[in-house]
Image (cartoon, rainbow, N blue to C red; front, top):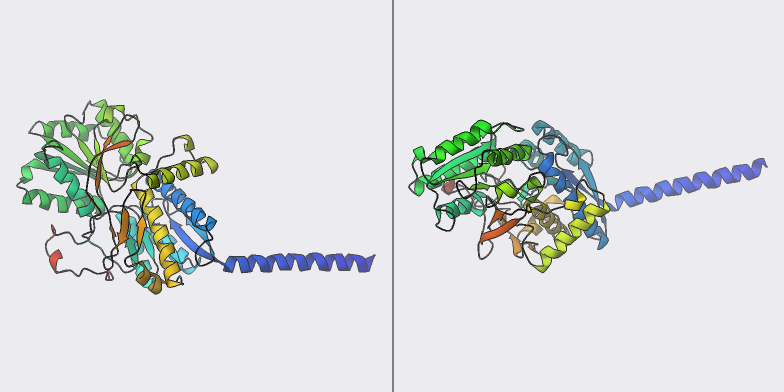
Length: 421
C-alpha cells in the first residue's frame, strides 16, 4: 500500500512539474506587448476602448499564427489619468514585464511623461492619437495626426464658403500642452490669413471640468461680432457637459459651428446628439466611411464587444484613435516579421516605409524618416444617431509635418527622429 501511494505521489508530482515546465516554455514562446491606457479617471471615457481594440487586434494576429511563430501576450496596466503614473507604469512594462513594445497614451501630457523613460531604456511606444506635433522621438511611432493632418485643414474648411466662411474663432481647450500648442499654431495660421487678435478668443478649462454655462454664454456673446466658429480641443469626459450646455442654451451649428479635434463616436455615445446635428469633427477616419475594409473592421469590433460583454456592447462604435491603434499594432507586427526579431533597433529600421490597407479605405505609409503616418484628412458632421457624415476629405494621404511651419525656428529643425533630451 505504502509503495503504491509513493508511486502515485511521484507520478502526480512529476505531472505537476511537467505542467510547470510546459507553462514556462509556453510563456517563453510568447511576445509580451504592453497596453498603457487610462481605464479610470477623466480619460477613461476615451482610452478604455483603445485598450479593448488593442486586445481585439492581438487576438486577430494570434488567430493567424502570431508573429514569427509566437503568440502575442498582452500586459495591461492602468495609469488612471494620473500623468506621473504613466511614467511609472511605462518603466514597469519595460523593466519588469519585459514587453517588446507598448501601445498607449492619449493626452500629450501622458506621452511627455513617459517619453524620457522610453528614450532612457530604448523602449518602443506607439502613440495613436492626434497631437500638437513639436516632437519626433526615435522611440515613438505616431499613428495619429500632426496639426497639418487635422487642425490646419479643419480651420481652412471653416474659412471656406462650403464651411460657412467663418471670420471669428473661439478656441476652447483643456488646459495642457496639446490644446495650448495647437492653438499657438492656429493663432499664427489665422494671422497669416489676415485674422486679427480681436477676432480670436482663447479659453482653457481644467481636466474633468463640468460647468460650461458661462463659457457657452460667452461664446454666444462673442459670436455677435460676426460669423464665428468654435475650435474645441476639450479632452475626456468634459466633452459631455460641454455639448449638453450647447444644447441647453440653444446654440445650433447653423449659428456657431463647433469643430472638435478630440470628439468622436465614442465620446458621443453618452449624449443626445439631436441638438448637435451639423457640428463638426476633424479626424482621419470615421466609422461611417463606406468601403469593404471598414465594414469588416466595424463588424469585427461589434462582434468582439458582444463576445467579451463590454459595457454598452449593443451600441459599440469605432473611432479614429481605435483605427490608429489597429493600424499601429499590425504595422509593428509586420516590421517584427520583416526584422525576424523584436529587437527595438531592428524593428525601428523595419518600420520605415511599412504600409497597411487601413479601414479608412486608404493605404497608409509609415514615413521613412519622421516616424509619422501619411494620413487622409476628413471632416465629419454630427448626425442624429451619433455618427458622422463626411462632408470633406483630401484626395489621398498627407505627409505629416511634426515641426509646424507656423512656429518660428521650426524650419531649422531636422526632418528625422532625434531624442528629446
